[in-house]
Image (cartoon, rainbow, N blue to C red; front, side):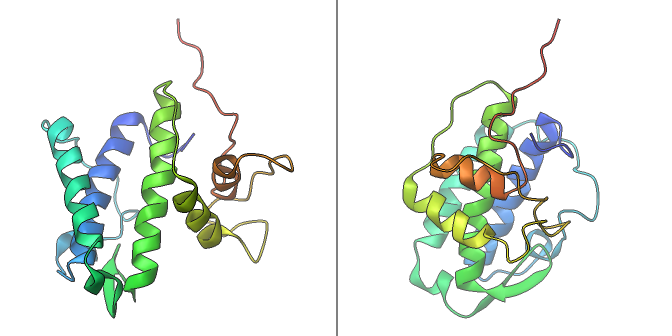
Length: 167
């Protein structure tokens, strides 16, 4: 559902963004926070990604539970932004790319309503044609669609996307 990424690239992106937003919450500038994720193709997927990604996700959650993570400014993706915005962007990245990964691998995916609402608020466009480079053009979803489907549509993805048949 995320056309610029194969599953391995999406996993590498998740490894990178969990490190970047963990360090952003800690106000720890460095290569993880100063690199634009779109500036180069994803590198090779770390051999230990199966243990690395869950560990970094735990560290990310712990870092954003600290009140000071939400205060002042920080950097992520080479962009300086308010801590409050960075926290919501991190959440959005995890919710939407979590959906991408689940869909691409044929798994069910759920996210809590509060997180999905925060994503919808972040992505609600002032211009429904979308902002290329940030989110693709909005994919319309039916009235009354589940909140996660609305968030996915706002991200420029089709909630009905399924992987192509193989074989």
